Amino acid sequence: MKKLITSIIILTLAASCSKSFLERDPLNKRTTESFYKTPKDALEALVAVYDVLQLGGFDNIHLISEIASDNCFGGGGESDMSWKRWDRFENDINTNDGPWTKYYQGIYRANVLLANIDNVNWGADSSNKVKYVAEARFLRAYFYFDLVRMFGNVPLVTKPLDPTEYFQPQAKPEEVYKVIAEDLEFAIANLAPTPYASIAKADYGRVTHWAAEALLARVYLYYTGYYAQNDLAGVTDKVKVRGYLEELINTSGYGMIDSFPLLWQSSLANFAKEDNKETVFSIKFTSAGLKDWNKNDGNRMMVMIGIRNKTVLPYYKGWGAGSVNPKLYAAYETGDTRRTSSIISVTDENLTYNESYPQYTSFFWKKYMPMNDMKPEDVGGDFQIDNYYDYVVIRYADVLLMAAELQLDGDLGKAQDYYNQVRDRAFRNNNHRITVTNTDAGKQLIMNERRLELALEGVRYWDLLRQGVTVAKAAIDNTSADAQFNVSFRPETKGLLQIPQKQINLSNGSLHQNEGWSL
Image 1: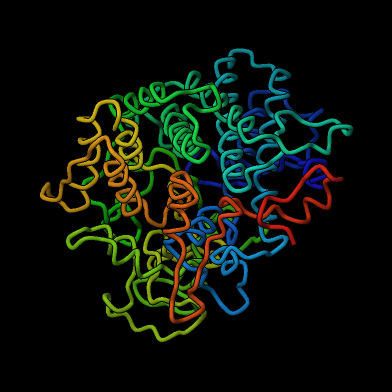
Image 2: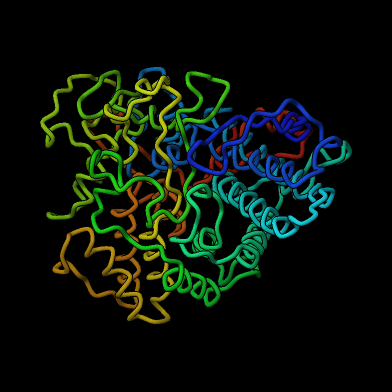
């Protein structure tokens, strides 16, 4: 903890995304005293906050949460024990140090920007001040939401710390969620509601009014579900969140593309391309790092879930993490286009693949799978670090399903309509509609639909936890004749991950391990 909080984080900005405003020339090292003079300085500092979104590979929250859920097993090689331990809820001391450090790095950068933005001479550019503050507060909320979901009991830091403040105690979760909600409410109020069609291409990947509304809904549903509360830490209630989603649905210009398979790069020539109208918020990646391991321009998670050790056309190689549970493949109904668009079946696709490794199931992720026709080497990169496919954090279909869930006890007609839209697109017809009701059964229909629609997008584990630890255990537990696939969710952990022992040791007694993870 001391090492993390006391580190002097210099705003050294690598060109990180040629697809968006995030591309900026690298800076030499500069201190905060010589920085924060011009609007350009402020923008570069903001880009430094965005840059943290790209960090992470084997320990990316997207991958961790899918492995921890019932969607996937750990996979990987004999020595890839971290993935297997996330799958089996086993102790591993410092496995989670990467995410912990990443999120506090992002929070630190956001706090430094927010603390120094008044020092900027804005001149005629003053309208950008509030915009940059809103974006920085959204990003701080984003980092804290991932952090508090993973670890539950975390220090709450909302400003750069003096040396006497380095050893921060763990805050109550509701205190962290209060800051998250306030930050997102500020972003909603201060980012212009620019329709999707009017957003400049150069600004794709940048925080929007709509992204803030959608993320606030996700936070609301998780907090009120996991902690069994009626509102979001006293800041936001259901009626307000419903209103935000209604505004997004009716006025944002976002919508679903016509065909589910075309959302993903595995459709190759027919791919709807990144930043399509269904992408409410995404993390941008490029191959601009060009084999430079010191940069984090590429989507390093992609190689983790690639087909292990072999190129199997049309797919490209990787390390085989997150072997897909056959139960997920079997959960799709006949005619549901999402099954073969989300998951690769070696058998059903008649692929020649004879590798054998721990927890291999013959099912791989198709979403985010590296593709041979889009491999990094073709543009001078390294397949391990330079995959350049964006990670879509929130899709419009997710917005519809969140709105449907929130309208079950509000406007049931709207709930039905939003639910229908998702299923109609999945089956390419309206013959598979199911009536939703304001009952537990109606809620379960929507949760099941979320599993199928959002499979392998980093959502499932959190959806299980917000339904309760008992529900999560019933779904995640797996018994097999092959012991390597035996999984037992440990309810004593409450689904929280192990705080890195390294951070506990550095905290001077201010950090305490989560329940169920004592060594």
